[in-house]
Length: 214
Image (cartoon, rainbow, N blue to C red):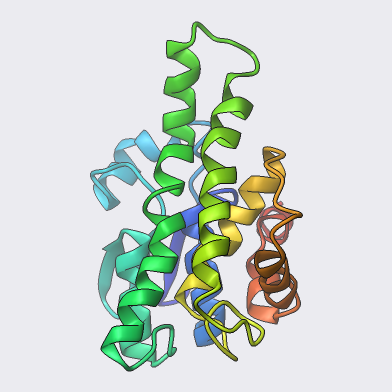
């Protein structure tokens, strides 16, 4: 096993973000699956890595790091990925764009929250899908408006992938999974096409991750 180890789950949005960033940085890493459906994230072994019982966990540079956005900051600062503009004004705007999905939409659409919502609904069969659509579609609509402040060239905020792209693509995967339509959002669709064609994003896709672990 290499010096860099990523504990993740193939469908985890936060893990997906880190796979993209590690690929952009050209960092070779060993992937260790923590199966959320089977409850492996609550095992004593994983809780010893992360007391929150969450993925991802990244072991790198002699550190054990948690929280995907914090890890992205670390990789950006130590590997010069250029995920954020140098101008502090623009940097704040790009962070706000990225956080609109990573902080506001993603947390209410993760597995634990959806399961609890289904439980509280009395186990309604259509609850998870309705729950996801309720939050994902409006979140993407807002992201589309925020994108109008930047020129897609072809990525969210410029000619190279940045923090917003890394946060957006996992949410688009979830949107397709839960049939939250965004075909009428042209800026987002253009960014999705650009990211899908980028090798770092393509290799990080959940389908690729699942196939590699099979």
